[in-house]
Image (cartoon, rainbow, N blue to C red; front, side, top):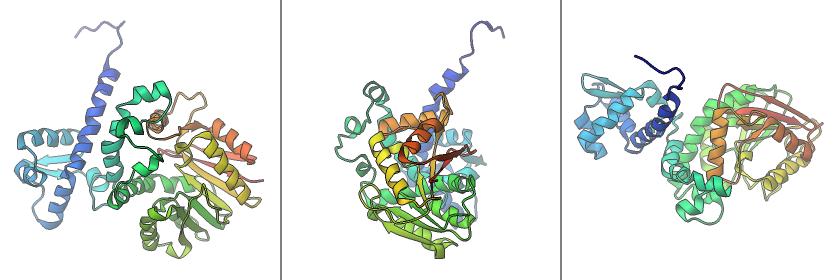
Length: 348
């Protein structure tokens, strides 16, 4: 086939035009409970997979339309199809089913029900430089108060973040040798995935998950089920407004990118003053390149912060400057092979 070599191929543009369709197809399949229906069947029945009709009834879907969605999930590698029966792929079993401790469904449902609408107003966010909560949902007050309308929604969102943390936290705690530290306090530690990973890695380390009291129930459950539970604890507290418990290592995992500069400076100074000499702060965030042209995931996450929060992603230079202003004189960074990188700032 003849092609004018002076004209670039449109592959990138076409792929990006299709990209949101792939995302929404996965979101819809999770929301409709398709993966969970297949998961339940595989647990209770010797036969493998479900037919289109067997999936249409419990999900309440039009069979003809459902077939299009199911076959799209097959094409994306989320489902298998054999003898007209659908089954979950290994990826779906691990990340898209409610029964899996590694599930990402809470974050997927949040992306579908909340972030999708916020991103629809990205143009206005770029024009005005502010998040889109009021425009999209008409909500006032603290941004994060809108995340969890019910305890069930909070639980599922945190489980999604836990699944994400199970991918990244073991790598973050290995990025530096933390064996010299005695007590880690994970500020805004959610389900405790970073604290658990740290204690699993360092057998003499104690760790405390600190988060708002109403968000701690899942962390308590996770900690109690951990093999390192004797060295793990939880504290209900607001790290912005209340004094920090003493420790020689603090952690901030995906916290700083949520907030504006005044809040970040306030928090970093507070942590520095609470640390003993030789103590350190472990930061887990996506780190931009110095020229801010990549990595792509960090840039897209920065756009997500723009529409969702008061913050953004930053380069190592930007973090080093903020940490130096707070008093830290030694700052190291490791770029990992996961979506989250690691910074260790030490009080000398």
